[in-house]
Amino acid sequence: MTGEVVIAGAGIGGLTLATALRRRGLDVVVLERAPALEDVGAGITIQPNAMAALRRLGLDQRIAAEGAALTTAAILDPGGAPMTAAIDLDALGRELGAPTIALHRARLQRVLLDAAGAPPRLGAAVTGYDDGDDQVVVRVAGGAAVVGDLLIGADGLRSAVRAQLIGDGEPVYAGYTTWRGVTPAGAVEVPERTSESWGRGQRFGIVPIGRGEVYWFATGNAPAGGRDGDVRAELRARFAGWHAPIGALIAATPAERIVRTDVSDRPPLERWHRGRVALIGDAAHPMTPNFGQGGCQAIEDAVVLDDCLAAHPALPEALAAYQARRLARAHDVVRGARRLGAIAQWEHPVACWVRSVALRATPRSAALRQMRRLLTFPG
Image 1 (cartoon, helix red, strand yellow):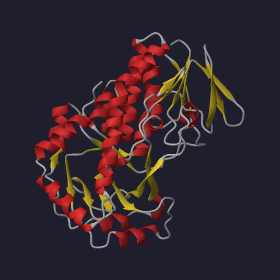
Image 2 (image 1 turned 90 degrees about the vertical axis):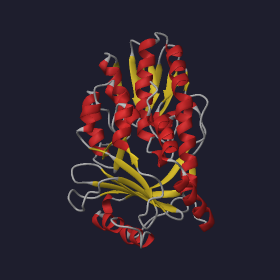
Image 3 (image 1 turned 135 degrees about the vertical axis):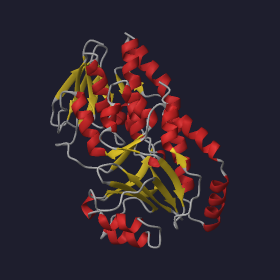
C-alpha cells in the first residue's frame, strides 16, 4: 500500500482505522456525510476485547480517562431482585488484561478524532464508486470524486458502499425499539453497578459513564417507525412500578437528550470485500445491541485490517486475510446478540417465567465462560 486509503464514515470503526493507518505513515482521507460532528448520541461501553485492541494504538488509557470502569453487572427483574448472579467485571477485567470502560459516545469520538490526526471531510456523502485494476474512484454527493488505492466502507447500517458491493436491500427490523438517554451531571445519584432489568417485552439498562452522568437505555416491542409524543411521560408510564432509580433517571433526562432508534441488523455475509473495496463495522456486520459489542467489533475490525495491510504487500491477500481472521468471530457475535435479544424481549407470561427460572439456575461459571469468549480479543 503506497497510495491513499479512502474511508467512508467517521464513526468508531472509520476513525480507529484512520488512526492505525496514519501511525504507519499511510495517506488517508475520511469522508463523512454529516455536515458537522456534534456531541450527539448517548453512552457506550468499550469492553475488554476492544480495550485490548485499542492498546495496540496507544489509546486505551486515554479512553479510560474519559469514562468510568464498570465493576459489577447483574440482570434484575422489574422489582429489582437478581435474576442472575452478579458478575465481577473488575476481576474479569484483571483476568483478561483490560477493563470495561463506559463513557459518553461524544467523549469517545473526541478521543478518536484527535488520534486520527487530519479531520474528516464533512458533508461528503459517498454515493458509489468505480473499482478499477489500479485505483478506485469514490463518488461523493455533489459530483466530486476521490481517487485511492483502497476504499473502506465504514458508513454504518445503511452503508452506501455495501449497497453497491453487496446490494442486499434494507436492514431487518428485530421487532423492538430502543430509547437511550444520559442524565445531566449530578442530576441523580450514580449507581455503584451496571444493571439490566427484564420484564415482559421490555427492558431497562443503567450504566454509570463517569463525570456524574448516568447512561440508560430502554427497549420495548413495537411496530417499526414509531414516534413519541411526550417521550418522558410515555416511558414513565411504560416502566411504572419498576424499581428505583428507573423513574428518577427518566425524569432527570431532558426530552431532547432521549434518542429513539428501531433495532435492526442484517443476515451475516460470507464476503466483505471485492477488488479494492472492503467493509468494516456495521457496514460489514450490523448487530443488535444486546451484547453492547457493535462499536467493540468495529474497533477489532479496524485493528485487524491494519495488521493485515501491514503484513501482506498485495492487496487481495491482505483483504482475504482480514476476512479470514474476522468473519467467523463477528458473525458469532451477530447471531448471539440476535438470540439474546429475542429471548430478552419475550412477553408471554409463561415464557417469561421459564426464562426467569433458567436464568436463576444458570451457574455463574457458565456465564463467565461465555463472557470470557466474547470479551477476549483474538488478535
